[in-house]
Length: 254
Ligand SMILES: N[C@@H](CCC(=O)N[C@@H](CS)C(=O)NCC(=O)O)C(=O)O
Image 1 (cartoon, rainbow, N blue to C red):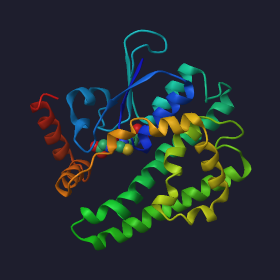
Image 2: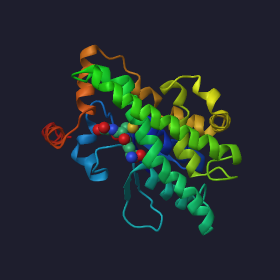
Image 3: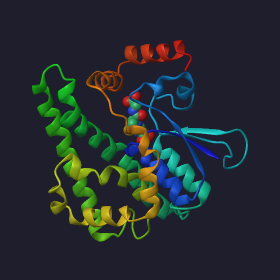
């Protein structure tokens, strides 16, 4: 059985979608990132960067001790190797897929995360809201550029890495389908090939199941004070803040 340390967000969905696609059994271990669970000593041993998703495979490929992994790209590559699915074994084909996996990890995910931060969350936390304008312009501009990169690729290919559905699609879809919500629903008119692919992947039963996994976790009604406390935990993390959160978690016995 695979334990998935998880909260229902785009990076979390990558892993539940992959597990559903592979037909692997998994057990969700909630990591309430707004509540500070990512600073518990136990979680930091699995994921030293205080970010979810992470997995512990209790029956790892090759046998031996349970295998703990963090970073969704590494997790998907491991699950592909274990299941023998969604990553070709032929060297050239394999690296065609992996270059898009790395592209997502280094580009689309971080840029959309930052665009969302400046455009939507920033107003609640910035000391001076005028500071948000340049950040929004910079990151929404990058997201627009990246959408164009995907659209061009998908104009000539059914899937991101060519003619077969792969971990490149599984890792990219959970961010890409949110483009309309982040920028404007009109964005799909500019990127019709991307829209075609987003809709096609959305139809897959495993994608729907993975996207819904643990959806009840994030649905609590929160007061303004609780929202504020969660923002304090999640944003403007520095070494001092992270160390304090780690110490508080240890004191609470977590
Ligand atoms: N590159 C990482 C990114 C993971 C990530 O940013 N996770 C966020 C939620 S989507 C998180 O755990 N945040 C907790 C925090 O900021 O302390 C991956 O793809 O696994």
